[in-house]
Length: 371
Image (cartoon, rainbow, N blue to C red):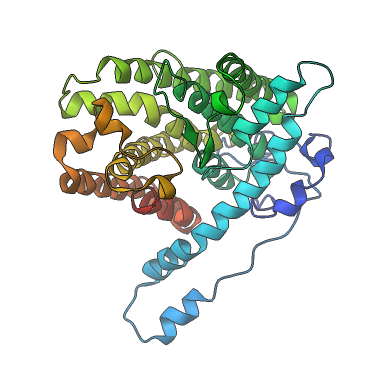
């Protein structure tokens, strides 16, 4: 396939101007080759690449017997925090633009939506969208809109999850939960409005010039978030309190409650890139396993971490009798299970080669993080 120019997701400065979130300077569409391999026409003022790490030279000069692939993975692991930081900045700018504060009394709702969404979190789901989109040369402007939609939907789920009728948590991302900073009724409306705004953003022509791609994004996110996805998992989570579920039941619960949205985030780049079905399936499998590993790591942090580290109340799962893999397997076996899932996730990416090195590093990060 002919090389199609595209700027990298790491050029966060290119999204500093709000007008660059419009599609008049970026067109997302199927590959000019007609081969269905996911290339995109890209016209953008954004440009620039991040500086290269000196880690390769450090490893080579150390005299260590390291294979080229290992050097690449080592560099990716070192570059991951910077790459995640750049994506977080890019998506924060996009969210700031996509969640404006209107005039009038309803401005209170918009302010609460921004409170719940902006200025915090790892943006792991957004990173998955942006990084998988890069595999198919998708415009970072279009990818940032999808990443923002995912973060809105994720924020809605956290706002509702923290409500007294659900998990009843007063702390989120190191600050008062939305229902504490505002009130319960406003928090309910915040979740409702963030969810609908997420789908509105996906459906807008600025997200992709191909209506079919936009329809697929909407359909896939709805499936991931609905009764057979995140919401269904939340129902299972509430029903399971104190019930002592076995391993397979906990795995299914967590795959729905947490895993489906992470899986969608990994798939979204392939949908944007109009990728071949087998490539989309590989990224879906990667997202499924990363999501499972991520949730087990969350369970371990609830057991072993501190409130200061995690930014939310530690020890609540055990106190509430939540169904977790830590409760089923114990901490050490649960940790081994998470590590196995992370390694399995990385294997799904082998056919993408070095282009997926940051995604491989992210699988490891999902189980070694401390918040």
